[in-house]
Image (cartoon, rainbow, N blue to C red; front, side, top):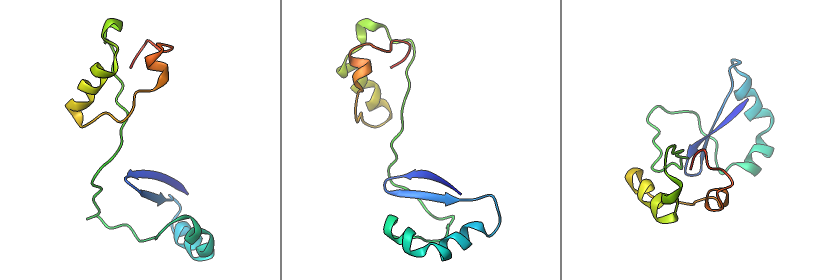
Length: 96
């Protein structure tokens, strides 16, 4: 069984072995109910409103490394959530 984040508070449980996931859901219902708010079969019409993504930028001159620069870059896609400490302290300079 594999678990993938779909964004917001949604995850996708899947398995390549036919019938395994259905069997697991039945046999482990109490345990799964303690972890997940609900379990529903996949529906192709499912849509997630928001999703967090990591954007890795290369080639930004160190003189431009600032929260303001990264906020501007984030605004081109959506909005910046966080700049990690390693970037601010320049522990990692290969990418931002």
